[in-house]
Amino acid sequence: MENRIILLIEDNPDDAELILRAFKKHTIMNPVVLARDGGEALEYLIGPDAYDPSRIGFVLLDLKLPKVDGLEVLRRIRENEKTKFLPVVILTSSKEDRDLIEGYRLGTNSYVQKPIDFNQFSEAVRQVGLYWLIVNVPPPS
Amino acid sequence: MEERTAQLAESNQRLEMVNRELEAFSYSASHDLRAPLRSMEGFAQALLEDYGDRMEEKARDYLGRIINASRTMAELIDDLLSLSRVTRSEMRIEKTDLSAIAETILATHARTEPARAVEYVVEPGAVARCDPRLLRIALENLLDNAWKFTGKTPNARIEFRVVRENGVTMFCVQDNGAGFEMEYAGKLFAPFQRLHAAGDFPGTGIGLAIVQRIVHRHGGTVRAEGKPGGGATICFTL
Image (cartoon, rainbow over all chains, first blue to last red; front, side, top):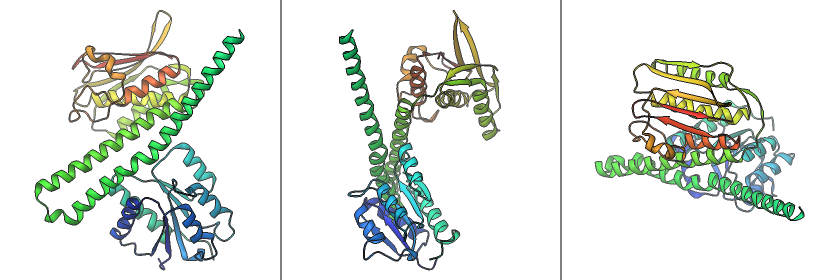
């Protein structure tokens, strides 16, 4: 897994805690950087002190966020030359058609609805983590 | 005439506003109502996993109840959202083979539950001008019910038939399952009304409410007939 960062963009502290718990439970030990709103996420992604995109394994993106919403964050990731290939997985409560359509139109790599049942939630997080950190081959930096 | 046009324009505007509000409500329900449930379910589960071995049986039982209730509520929210999606979605009317849809749904049930010996009959050639996506949802709900409520019936039988009465074409799903008392027939179509104990037959009671919405959107009517232990027949027009 080469210790690439997982950038978790999540405003709900409970969901963030549950996601971290799921990673830990499945011994996914990569460092997780938490952004609590869209503005903070953009600082980490494209601001002057942004992380080198090649250090980021994948982005877990919630949609309903304070300040800058998730779809806008996705749009900015895709229109920026440095971050446009970054794997983005939308992980959100809703599966409303308009979120799905906008998410895919803006180029998300995956869309996962957060299950209520923690066992399912944890399994979803495990699969996403393993797939994007191990199975998937990232673009050359 | 002018006054009438103005009235129409006004009620149209009001209708559009109500629709927009409904859309906004469903959107926020979909995002915001689920999140607290995830916390309740998730942290109750975490307590069980991390501290369950140090708890008394009773404490674990209480946590189990919190977990079950959260899951039930999640199902209810999902069902309400499906109901509202059926109301909000745009209609696309085309010539649709209802028999083919019914056949596919029943064949899928038979394939996924081979242990159930259900005899089913689909009358071919039930064709209607309707929204195929919505009618698939309606037939799924009707046939899923028929499948479910014949679960304890030996020689279970499900039929999809076309009935013509006084020049009106009705599409009917008939089963010989658990049935219901006619006294409560009116209640069947209200959301979350159940006529059976949850332990006997699972479900939240949203299915027939969805069927009714779909039928109403096509300007049709739906009615139910049945008797306890004697099966149920649901007929609709489009």
